Picture 1 (cartoon, rainbow, N blue to C red):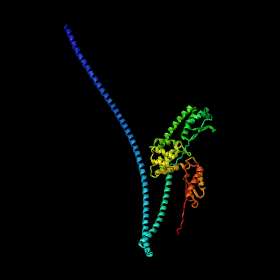
Picture 2 (picture 1 turned 90 degrees about the vertical axis):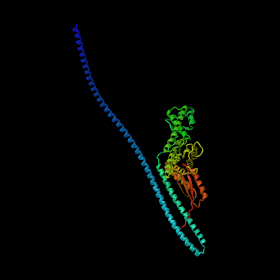
Picture 3 (picture 1 turned 135 degrees about the horizontal axis):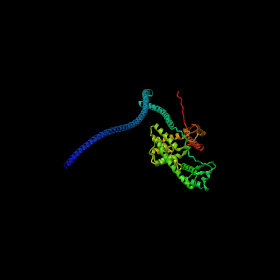
Length: 518
């Protein structure tokens, strides 16, 4: 019994020590495993840190390259801006140099004139001294010979020299006026030549076509409709007459209103293309064509003002400008003529150091009366001036429009410029529908009519046929006869010739007196 108890006690002790030993071994193994895991974790952490470090380096490099690219783009953009500024400043410098050279030339011209004036003043001073000396000599001679008093001698001498001075002054005045006219005419020719050369355009003026082609003659019957209902409906809605005659595969649109005629033309072409022609369809097509034309008129007016760099033009005036697209005068499209007149006016104004934009605006607007002259009474300059005044345009523009055919007196240089530009654009050969042969024939006929009257010595057609100058024989034609001759020539020209615009008849009666100096 005791032995068993001891055995059990010993077994328990042995088991306890074995358990403790096993527990220590287990703890030791766990420590070793934990150390190995710690080493593995540390190693993995180092590897991850290296990867993170490399990734951070890569991201840093990418950011650096991105920033570098952005900086390069910004630098390139700045360089382009600087290049533009440099070009702009260079252009301004060139303009300034050009202006400085012009100023220098003008200063040189002024200096030359001053030198000439100084020379003339010296010459006059010398002549005055000489005159005083002669007066003194004459005084003494008169006192000795005539026994006159000093006062009487002075009065006679002064009267004598006054007559001589008047005569010399008249000669000098005539010579200066002649030289001034020659220089002014030469300068005007240069300005006009420059204007024409810089606006030399190569275009054929559009004209409003009234003939509408048909795919076949069978279409004429469809246009007329049953008992003429289609053609009556069309003419009633458009105000344009359709002429259906024997012309093969074509009909003619007749009407004085160019915008209505263009609407009718577009509507009829659309109906022919569609093939469905009846009163309801005709009304819809005409409405659509009218909207298209209104849109074209509005866009044309805006585009024309933009092309000529003109601003602050009222919308109603722009609408009139757009309507000129469908208006022709002597075969010349009025809008093209107005644009060309605007550019020529601007160039002439630049040569005269005037406001180019104002001159272009007046040139463009000078014929706006033609947009509605078939709707209102009066000449197109009067109608255009009324519209300009109604839309609160400046007085200089109103006067220039009214005076461009010399119906009223021009009140500014711009009015005269527009007169010249209008003549250059409208009367030069080829601008209007007129061949060179007919143009030359018209000039010959003009001179022939003027020369057919009695007392005419010579006649010359000038300014592209806008003026005829008649030299008469002084002994056969007096002043009153000259007035009558001018009226008779103008009346005969109106009866026998067809011509664009107006022709001025100028009769020149010259008196010449000759004296021989020996």
